[in-house]
Length: 403
Image (cartoon, rainbow, N blue to C red; front, side, top):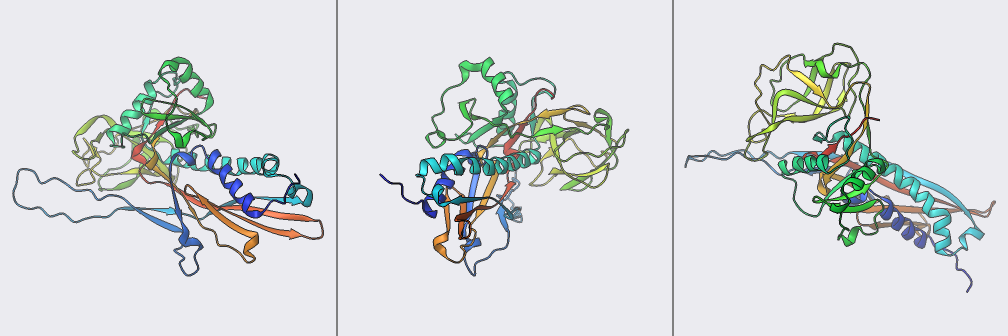
């Protein structure tokens, strides 16, 4: 039977199917779609506001009301990154059947596009995650480090359901599976059975193999083990610090640290945990001043640390890992720790040549136009997206051997 010319609708659906299949990390986190971007007269700008549940304090041992203000906290998710892939086809190529066309053209194009987006999102979310487990310099070859990460998620009240995942590079995955093969069982998550990278499920998490995980590179000349605070932590909600460095060098975004005598607490009861509170650098001002997450709250409904007073100047700061070393970081998380959002790009004139489709929270637009001189059809595939760590406390970095 003669082949029929491929339509733009067929190409769009196949491109979206491939994108959905190849999104290893994106496909495992919360995905939101907002069609108001593509509706005339309904533009909302490029920022979505995501609200957190309010936090309150208990009235204990008293019948007298102690009314609290309802403080609504939110975070911004900017949907402003437009990526795409551009191709050209001649009449002969457009006469291929869909399977041939997909294998020769769409699959390599979508693999490249989604791989790079997946990498950016995974690395950005890893940098924003402040909890960490494992021992820097020691290979992850058992379930000990993942078990520690699982504990961090439990302590931060991440839901104990089937939506916990973990991403490792293939080297680390090989070491884990070789040492603990008996513990791995086939995943029963039907919705994930065609997802690339899914290995198996154990210890309350789906294990994914992903070469796009982020590598933490500690700065070369910082004496990481002997840095100290150069000032006080005196403001509730403080997110910046100045440290005294014996050897001057900039602190890098994504570096993780703890502060002596600043302990983590239970999110609801505020009871002190046995481990120090963990933090991550989110931006730098100069060689010794940086911003971090989460904010430090010493009291109130949002209290997240204990053991800290206002006189914490010169307290020791301990960094994850060693100076002049790099570590490939795994990431354990609940699906709702991170959000990937796409928006509906507008349909251009000649709608038969511009099609938009959405599947499972991922929206793609395919736009074509002809080049009569060269007997070619120019095709562009676009995606408009953004991402954010909306509940980073439901994630935990897993560190292993140095590179």
